[in-house]
Length: 274
Length: 290
Image 1 (cartoon, each protein chain N blue to C red):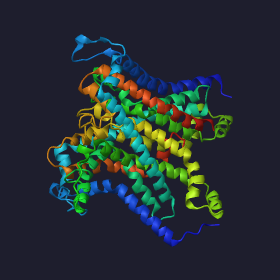
Image 2 (cartoon, rainbow over the protein chains, first blue to last red):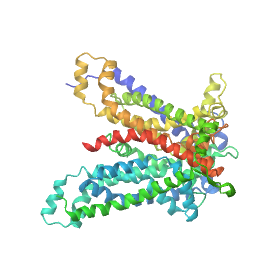
Image 3 (spheres, one colour):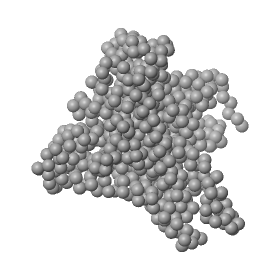
Image 4 (spheres, chains in turn green, blue):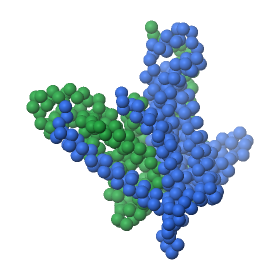
């Protein structure tokens, strides 16, 4: 029996939900609107209708060299994700399909490293980076981001791989497939969706990481998190420019995020909520 | 079934992850532990040496340390309270039959994808600025005095920003859990004449309890290390009013070069996180046995 929902109930619930949703979204909306204002307009009080100037966008590039930071962000987020996948796929694979006595303990230990506060290792890591010349280098930071997200990547892949039925592997083996063939032709096609989801979530996390990316860079390797943070010391009024820079910094990841809601739940709760 | 060969292959495939994580976490942590018993200042190396627990003793005698721990707990506690209660309310609202549910979901989840420095600076400048912010505009519209958020209530301001960032996460997780609630059970309860409140208390809340636990634990882990939001808004001030433990450790280590004290702070942060982690691991670990 279907539940009868009165139109009145639906109208009230819809209105309430939309009002709350727009309030939550408002800071983002207002940033996008302000980015199309001139600096003059931006400080003239509340106004939802911008003049539509693109001035701030061109200034962010011309005065601050926005594009370089953007490229660093792309390089770091994508690079660290690929690196993490290369290391994590074999591990998750073997844990899912050939679990040993210690598999569960190893998984839990990996999870526990994620729970360690970054500040606890700030100075040793800083020293290591300084003495090996990795400070403000893209490679160093890429490895750092890879290590930070490695536990989540292993876990997510593990929960996906575990859902692949083991009987299929046995069938392939009976048909005489070698281990290599088994991996390439049987497992990989089934694992691709899980790997893609993991990749998506990890790019988002790496893009928004704002502790190591700020502390271990100065100019050369600095991604958008560090670039935006440089706006915190005000030299005059810069609302429109800050808005343009912010809009550019969050837009790509926001759109990716909209497509990754399910993976987000799964990845960030380590499979505990699906 | 697994042969000796596949066993050793499995170990070989696992090795890179394990070794990398070990080198990255355990070795630096050992360094930090060692430094925490040392007087070590790269700018003034003459007085360096072993000092026992005196770095830790500072946590009792130095008001900055005590305040930073207190601020950390207030920040974590307040944000948890706001996001869990707000998240349950929002999840219940979105779960109703409404028009445009997909878009509402997208709008609500969005703040989670905003990088911390952007979130903090947007709130600081465009929403909470005492002269040009939206809050000031609203206050003036109603004839009130705009509030100087970061001067007068710095910690509250940071709590609001961080809660805004994490409310979507709580909402999304709780909504996922809510949607897995059996529709027939709900109908049965309704037909038995259970009102909204009793249905919520006896059916919905118990069903969501696991998801709520997960939200609290995972958020706590991230909230214990809030950093960028403080860096770009108050820089820990005025005084130490909005300094949390991670921020204090950063200041001691990289600005004042008091490595011993910073390391002791880092170890305390680890202990705090471990208390939470202990419960988190149990909650997640249960899932492994299924």
